Length: 449
Length: 75
Image: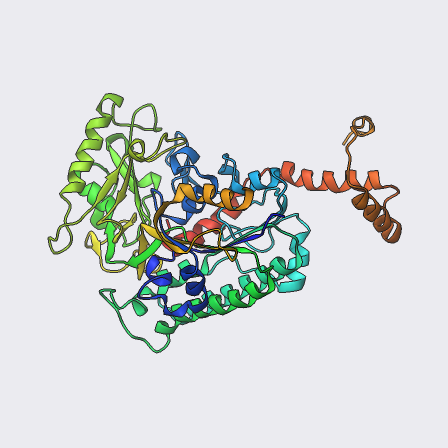
């Protein structure tokens, strides 16, 4: 008889927090990892929640998926759409498992809104607009779930300067999810259950500098230093209780989609591009209020060669004639512009003149193919340590804090993957590195062979 | 759905256990005169959501998610 598998996804968890110096708050999960196979999981380009989980569950690179982040560039336009489940055209692991006769349960896997049919059940993730939406498959599961475990909290709203509230909200969201998952995992039939918890990522971004002694701005705080430990301990003790209720031969996989590290600052990429002459604005930089979005109408597209998007990594786009609505760069000059951008990025230094290890990668260099509207460059300022601020109007290109959102942490290249098999078919050892796109095959091997 | 389309049938097989469960359900609950009618209803309900909602977010829904992601620093 096929054994069950419970997949516990802890978004953004770095190896230090499950295996290393910060793992003290995951006693039970650490123990499972020690008794199992331990990997560091190398995330994809880019190491961001969307598309990283998708890469893990489809076995395809972001290029093959045509999904390069939360936003999707409108074809032939300067605008964006938010990625949702309908953008996923590749076969997922759960599609295959369903065809092989296994029942699946999915909770919070990004992006699964709007919910698509699965052989089993599905509760969508933080990309769900709000609880009034139809967020489950089958559709009637929503009413049952809310009656049993309360209405869902899909995400927190981050308000800077109100960290007390963020702390309360992130823990409340975690408790909400754990209650719902426990209900589903113990009352429904399933062979494979995939649960991704986003509260871990939210807590990391908001409270990392109160938790990681290696953070350059580390601060011991009576309340904020307890948030991440409390979060970890709650997950740990909750899973220990749940684990005892599952069949004894259930395989457990603990994984994350990327890691976390200290944020050093935010680099104001579009201001930098404007100063270098790549981006032309209709107003002077000094006329803009701090935090002004780079809106379409602000840009003099006819004289703009390139622009960028902000976020935990930066996407650069060349304003190519024939591809963009008001392209200014002849297609023959495209390579020259990209080379020029890369050259400028190579010589880019930090606020005190320090060397940066900025990576500027072309999709063709890292993907077998690049579908959809791939960026022309994927840029990681100082190897992800500096996030990209896409906004304008700042007095400096180097912001010590974020232009929006929390500013304690950025993403890192390595997450975790640990497999605990109580029947010992997966030997306990340190297995080294597994690539994000290899995770699907590992899961198929465990479930189908 | 057009009545003439609904009257053309394709045969599928379901487990006897499920069939009996379904039969008991509609006998107890009422509202449907046969297992066939119930199964057709349930399937068309599930599938009509796929068609009408079209798996695309409305502008309002997308704005909600965009603002949330902006506040979180993702965009």
